[in-house]
Image (cartoon, rainbow, N blue to C red; front, side, top):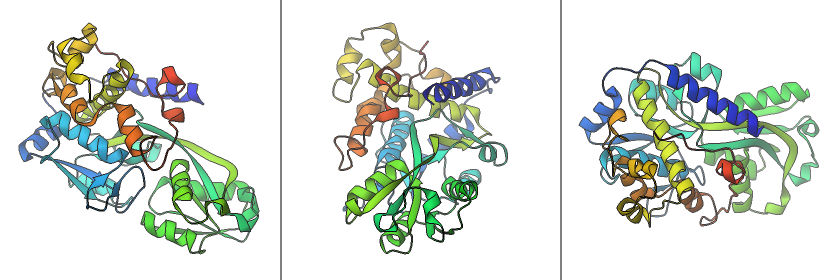
Length: 344
């Protein structure tokens, strides 16, 4: 599976590189700069660990931090230059296509229908997760096959809904499917007993179980239904805007690989330890020019949000309430599938 993900990501990157370069700067980047802020999609409720609102009304989470990273890359800092717009799963594509938002950073999977029918462009993965089914222990279910006559719930307007329908058909299970537009509604329905089981992204289910009542009474069924790589999504109309997203993700991973953190980025800039780091931090020119950004855009981004590991640790990992292991979301050198692109 790891080899498949790496091969797919490499093939996707190669296909992007082989396309003729668009002339001039990114039109979307110019629009964002002229407006003075980036409009980034948030969730229409709490998606724990990825996008949630704290008790002070501030957004936080992995997706939100990546929005901050992008705004800092463009403007030098995100404060005063980032607007998080709550949008439900089904409305993220129309909002992107209409220009109401500039970019979708909302744990979105790359599928053929989205790619071809909706004319969307997807970046390199910034997160990889499997999908599972969690059920109440009292159902006695061990597999989806054991939910005959039961009620299984999923998120409306997402790939989860299609995945559940496909799994039920595959396993020939006669079960009722109920969908909910908001994550809170879905979670509440499960814990209120309206659902015998729930299909969701495995990282989210793990958080829900740990945060919910009676974790010991919630079990994961044996079926791992799918693995999905999550990407940032933009429209196909602006390939240079896609380039910026890809290099933003790559730069967060490169900083982690090189040991460059929010705390030590100034030291690295003052004394770069390689030509690649010199270019990456804007000591020597070139890293921003091709993208329409300042050459120190990656420095500004790391100075604000840190590297990928720092973002992960404080939103999902060891420094968060959720303690989700990196797993496949570690760097390739550490047994994961994520890796930075080459700086030249």
